[in-house]
Length: 368
Image (cartoon, rainbow, N blue to C red):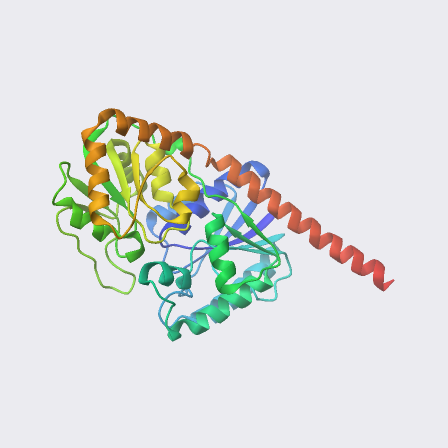
């Protein structure tokens, strides 16, 4: 089976794509990976080279959520169709929204990792401004055209349906991470947060503001500079900057508590990584994180800094409580296994291919 898959090179979608391509290898799936958003880093090139079932085509086109992207979006569409004509994929798997309505000759699925309109509603508390109207129209046309819409949580499916639906068909396939990548070592008395620090959805500022009153130090890892150039700053905490995968895994392994008081997080790879490494979780009380973690995390209202501080202080003060939350989080995290994710996507691909074959077979019989 041959799959043409798009991915951006910024943030969690890249990690998702690398995990998925590895999980698809046992099924004999060959992936042509089309990258966009920013040039591949040296580490990303090394990741691709380590995947025997992946061939990469590097593009530097702007993504639909970036400023003034539409000329790039059109050029990227032409580029993707050229790649498809050359590789003749059985499935087109899009991790961006803008290209679902292109004249593909294979079944198409789009994965809704997040979106600007749902982000704006959750983080700003109001609908996105009029400048995002073209974005909404583009995403709506794409999602209504494709054969299958996939999202990592039901909460994200419902958000997409409300903003852009209805769809032909949808499915929830949770994300996954390899437990062997995130071992736990001797835990140390500090609190960790990680991710795109410039993204207000992560609400890292709330943790930074609470840090001055905490018993344990707070350490934050991640990119503070926005793709547009401005930089976020955080008082009262130690910042490590953007870490490579091994260095971040080491932080997870040593930290005792992982905190993400998010306003918006359609799934959350960083809490999953931290939980696999044995961290107790303190998370924003939002539907998607409740869906993923159930009773395996301590939830706090994202806007309530005092509740955040109290939760962290209670966990730091009680070794047994902290150990219980850490154990619950790791047990829950092990459910999100790469093998399960790979099998779910392979089954979805297979069903889409079979449906297309049935359609063309039925059409040929009808015209004889």
